[in-house]
Image (cartoon, rainbow, N blue to C red):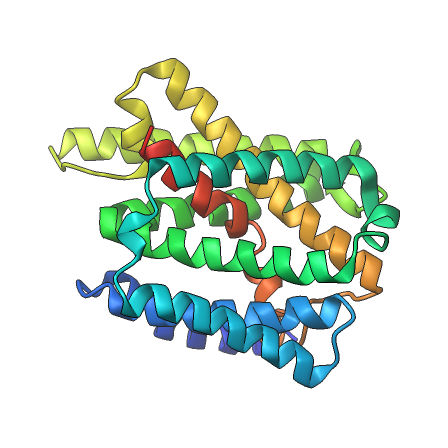
Amino acid sequence: MLKQRIITALILIGLLIPALFHQDPQWIALAGLVLIAAAAWEWGRLNSLELYPAMTLAVLSLGVCGFLWANDLIIYFDRSFWLFAGACWVLMGCYLIKTGVQHWSRVPLLLRWFGGTVLLCTTWLALVVAKSFSIDFLLSVLMLVWVADIAAYFAGKAWGKHKLAQGISPGKTWEGVAGAVAGVFCLAFIWVNVSAYFAWPSQSIFNRLYTHGYAVFILGLLFLVSMSVVGDLIESLVKRSAGAKDSSQLLPGHGGVLDRIDALLPTLPLAVMLALL
């Protein structure tokens, strides 16, 4: 299993890192399209769709995102759109976590399919917009999510006693969340100070928040870490409702694409929203 995980991770890194650092945004857009299409297929399968109808959902997601890209319509998704998208994510996240696993099965299937497609397409839009800000900005958001996830895992393993949402994800603890917050604050502190020391004009999410003062910096980071946890919990809720351990087996040793990007689904759009405030 470990060998599988390492091989899959190396392949993903080999594909995504060149796209991330390439100056032409089309490469990260294309990489994002592949991930979003795979995630849409997984979403359909987790929400009662058979193989081919789930593939239709993937094609629909590809079609919507491809149409926006091909016709240069991304520029029309302005600050108001991201504020609306951010508000929707916060309200929806709070509602779903409060109502729990049992309520999910009572949500109409059509609404689940449509809602999932919209959320995935919005994440792809946020990916492209974040890259248009700068490589620095996109990388900082990705690292925020990765560090939060890793720190939460190790803090939860070492000190986890108080369950965060036992009915949704029994393994997650408040100690894990505290570890995620601590890890991200360390990352942000190092990033801001290193960029200042080397007079590096960083456009990272950390520097953008920091320019608005300590209060915005602290609250913004807490908000993003919290919403990354919400994204993880919502995917766990959907999987638990479907009786699935992983969203799929597309990534040997890692589960599915949704398992890898769940925390990014709210965090990327919300980071874009904060950057435009």
